[in-house]
View 1 (cartoon, rainbow, N blue to C red):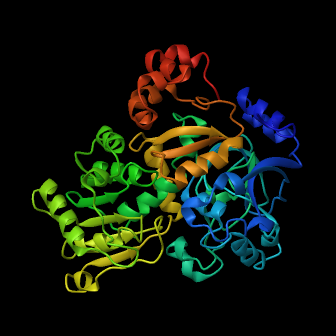
View 2: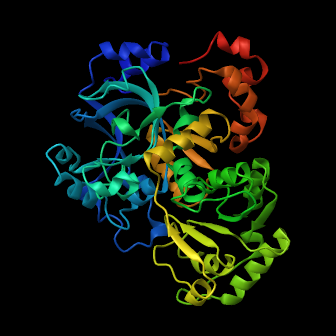
View 3: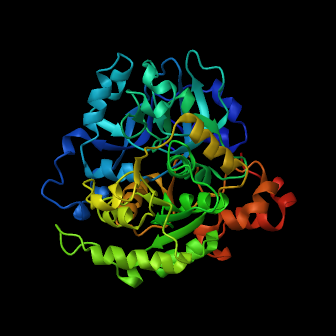
Length: 472
């Protein structure tokens, strides 16, 4: 349900009149998912696994921020959960208020972000509500998605690769007014066209992880994957790994998908992967205890990879679990191979035996999100139906805490979405014919045909009928 202040925005979009947003007043406040600065100590003494995002994530009515030059206010129809929202909710490795204070000191305009509450979220799909001074490419009513790179580009460092800008930040994590709210504040260069064949929730889900996987695996700034490469993908059915698996398959590589259950293995097969390791069933234990790894398990794991690939070691290891797997990743990469690392969902302190790196001429590449060009290319592939959303489940805004808990406990598959101003799933498609061609792929992570909404069944069986009732 939209709040009273944003109901008119919702009605304009759902009535198929998004351009009417230009004539509506900007609400003075809106509902957003927040963490509170006075609660940063609430989990002190607890191990990470016992911290509960449902206790720290709140749905509050918050003031709408002032719109500055080069910025855009977006009416948010849907968003999604990423690990950075989980980290924010657990106040680790640092409370995000540290980032907001640091950002707030950089300029009078940035000072808006330094507040005792933080509206979180690094994904969105929605409609432009207002464009600030100097914004000419976007106008009220435009259907958009947003990538999460926030940059200033006032220093020379970022002009070859915007990710090297010293003022690079992740929107909704290191900045305020993120996508898990009815209104979001973004820089105009974060926006991209919403793929016309996707629903609001499907379009919101890929943003962060799709762009991250593109840079990490495909871009020259990452592993620069080529045809024929053997690519080991950890968590291959998860929010990030499910996109890496698609990029490997589309790029002519040979993905070796590592998963933790038969259900997740089945999802990888539905994506088209054939070489799969269920690490739960095969019981790999890379650590003897909290302090010591077991190289025998590295060797057993490497032998299993070679068994699947016909004797080949991975050219690329797509790394994101971090501490738990990093020693094994360095070991199993081929001579001259690459371990490309982003995030560290199991811990930030990585340990590996450097003999296997240095003496075998391997490389470790750090990869963090994506620049605007990489994000645009990743979104373009979505729009062309070459990459598909891996949305598995959608929650209401009020259920964001539970959604974050599911991701924290790794009981999810693919990506977890959140409905914001969209009152239900299945809205937002403006190209039902193209959608019908790709519906099975779009639905891969949503279960059997029985779980399809009426909207989706219509798109599959009768595009003409659906046109008569299409949503904006």
